[in-house]
Length: 225
Image (cartoon, rainbow, N blue to C red):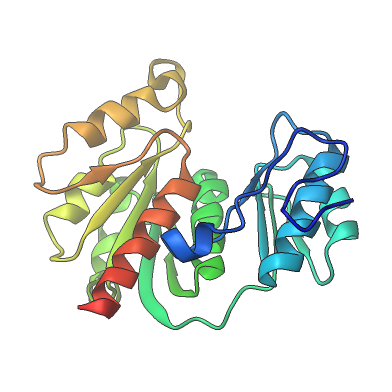
């Protein structure tokens, strides 16, 4: 149950209904730590206010609750996203380049966040540096985009490689993919922070959401220029 001021009755939650005016993107529902009922209530209120909603990092029970509470909501189990009411894309495109199939949960999260922000997305999967010809073959398509998000684990080298080949903003998203000394994505994060290519911007480990929000902000700035 919700109230007109955005508060959800019985829950310690006060939704930020003014965020689209300030930032261009509505508040998302971060699911970890919330009960399924809390996720569903917040999602329903945001959808009622904005006609669209995005739930992130939801488990199966939270996804089911949000889908039941929001008309037309769709669950994306791989990324833990529940989305509804994505607007017609008017911005972009943004290239989402992922190194390997294991990185897809975070690449999908980024792509769905961009769609929620009315940004066209072009996906370029399986572009890891172990087969450098794969990303080189996609360079013409990537270069036609407004900016690029690079999602990679293991050694995290792909953003530095691609950063030396394109003249658009590059946002690097390390993932917790790799073996022992990868330390849950810390090795990829360190590599990206120390990228040889100038201008590589890095978000936190697994933060596909933050990478998508940043790329959408770049697209809005380009439209205003």
